[in-house]
Length: 386
Image (cartoon, one colour):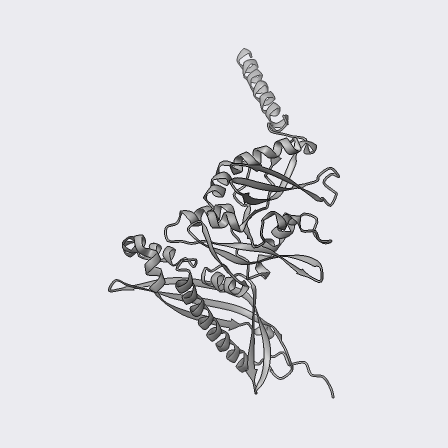
């Protein structure tokens, strides 16, 4: 009985300790009123000083309230110092766990991203899923300063664009971890999304569109929407979106939109007698989203005609775009280096030290297949009675 009593006593103590652990509060629990929650930040530089503008969320109304935001500015000789100096402005430590956006000024991007990445890597509270974008305005903070009736928190509104990425084909999604990966890969150059403000009739609108391309960590140029889309096709980053084209049918111009349902791209290196070439094989499945006009009846024969047209269009545009990048920038933003190192490590080891020069002259062949699904076929054109 004594042995049984001791065993029961030990079991009771063990259960008591377990319940104590389960019922205790979180070790780093903080009242929500004591937190300064960062939604996003803008990074600028004036002389030797870094200027950090934080967009913080007002949570005073409780979780059920539609939250507004406020801007807090701090400066320092380093980004870490500027971040710490913000505490003296607001009285609370910044809480980064919900931050969605890091906006970098053009000046900082041209100087180089290494100081930014070093700060991000050392701050344990900033999640690696935070998105990195480049401002095309004079400063990065101008983006956060924009006011619009439909925007309460600018950083969250920008993040929503990336959440709808399946419908938008002109914005690459680059999170902190991906940027680290790209910068660490030999031969690889990165492209970051860009943000800018457009003003019409006195109304300012925010656009997240296009991309900024880098040589290692330094900004060297920009791509427009169409160029960004072509780049994303090659990098196998297109999931959904549209291709709109004007064609001639019986001497009548017709605009047609192809809705992309699925896209798959593979880059294949071909090495023969030390000569490196690349083949890009791409397959696109889609529906016809719109045919402008009532002169074109989309039967199977018509669909085959459109498939061939879009195939020729993609082949021509992608090949021409790659040549432009080779000639004007000479940086591999497409991932050819990755494909070569994965498929032929021996050849890659030979050319890696001079890859930038090799890339400028490699021959690239584009082979695309477009398949128009049956749902849009046999739809008769809309006719208006006389």
